[in-house]
Image (cartoon, rainbow over all chains, first blue to last red; front, side):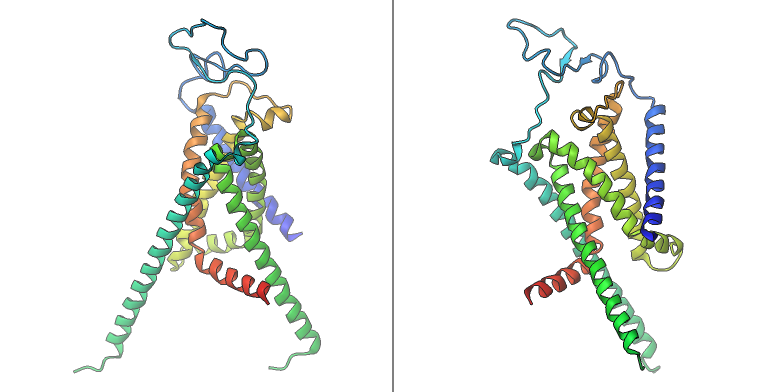
Length: 128
Length: 168
């Protein structure tokens, strides 16, 4: 029961962030979407309608093709060694940040302890 | 201090319950970190797994926040107190909550696989949400390891205890 109350409270906070985000998106003065999802000068083509551009077909200047043919889900990409560096990069960044924070935290704690020890020594030192 | 047998039983049960909760926190947080790492590595997972994993992470993060709601309330009440460490964690966690929520929200809005599969086709979604998704993903990649590292003593302590418990 207590957990459900907490879940409701957490959902409320997340909903508030979502509402703020949607409002931000709604009132954003950025470029408005053009003829398709890709924005001005971009047309998103999905599904079986176009598998590849016909031979000799040229794209009008200013027009950019984002997707041709059905969406490739890439379900096998995890089993291809060529994609492994992407995961390795993420892990390296995370490990680097964790190491930096841990080193900083240890340094800060040592500095605080040393300062506290100095103060204590000053207080307990007998006057000359 | 004298304790009744009933009291010692309830005390032992309470200790077991706390340990169970600690175990849940430890393993669940580990799974969350692994899930986030995979979801961020879009080029590794491919779009299908990236989107479904992102949706799952959204629900899991809500669960994570609910599990630690007591801490949120306690620390928010003590924000004006002298302990600086908890204040830093609170600010990092708040930034992470906003960043992660916006990342998942924008991911849902620009979804090309998961939402159409569920029969939801959002139209007129401009490039704004793609930019938000990319930016918040970069921000969360910086904040998630900080969030983990700020609790590294707890992680090491519990990790050691759990491994020792398993080795016994």
